[in-house]
Length: 189
Image 1 (cartoon, rainbow, N blue to C red):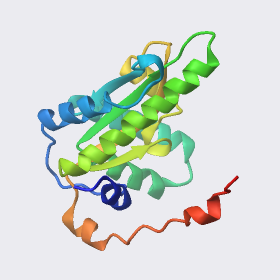
Image 2: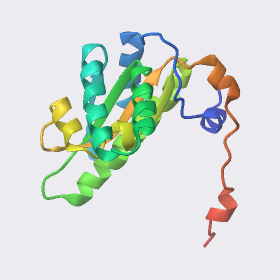
Image 3: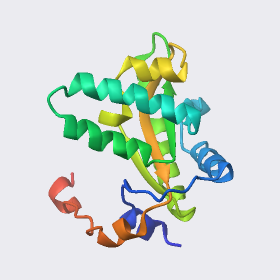
Image 4: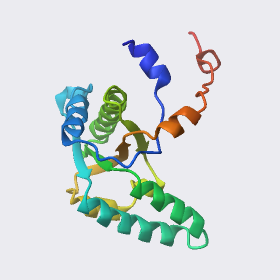
């Protein structure tokens, strides 16, 4: 396995088969996340697993949120809810807030982003699809998600990860990802 080719082939997978994800694979993703680089070894991440009955409650919460946010777009609400019902596992990932230290808090956020990206790469090895949601159905910026997971005040939600076994037909129909060349975004000093 080449790390570079894995990075180049990483994709957001949004369509999943109707198959539960084994707890052992979820635990493996969480273990991989803890190896992410983090300032002063603060290990600022916390994980909240949503599946089974909790997923049903989350779907109801998300539906209420989407209906409030998009009252004139029922098709958008319904398609978003379909995404939730077809995703076997959600993992809400938070970062520690360091009271009175904005720089340390920001460093924690960066570390948690690294942890999430590590999980993303590991998911592919475990034959799992993965998408990192930071708005919309992820409810990342809505206080109700914070309350739903029972997170203490010193935590900031960084992302809601959707995980499942990829739908093979959707994978086959995926177009290659395009990126702007680094040369257009680089200044050599």
